[in-house]
Image (tube, rainbow, N blue to C red):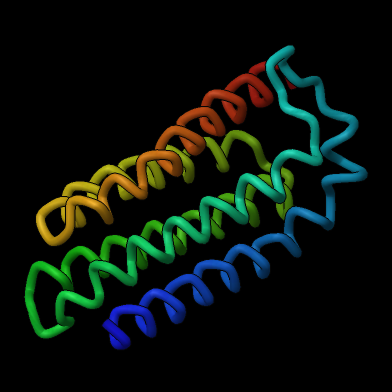
Length: 157
């Protein structure tokens, strides 16, 4: 049990760190460039993003920790965690492309790849640990919403 808790703490820390680092790209233009964009009526207020992403990174970390605790020596665990790592990189890449480079179209392509990677991660997590897979469902829903928002911002601008 202690090993599982340690894996969860490490995984949550990694996810939060990636989110924190991606936040630098976001902060560079969220109060400047982003405010000048035309946005759809369903665009949430800016203050909601930080708490939602913090919660999602925590859930993602818990899920990854549960999978990791099953034993990294196992090929299914390795596969699941490789997909998790790739989707986490694309998660950060989206912030860099959308906010850092200020390129909604290219960010839309990144988020489409991210969604595919999340679906594959959920598939592999489910093989290893069903609770871990279920913990990623809010993330999948939020990124799906973000993709629609990204598309509408690109379309309106």
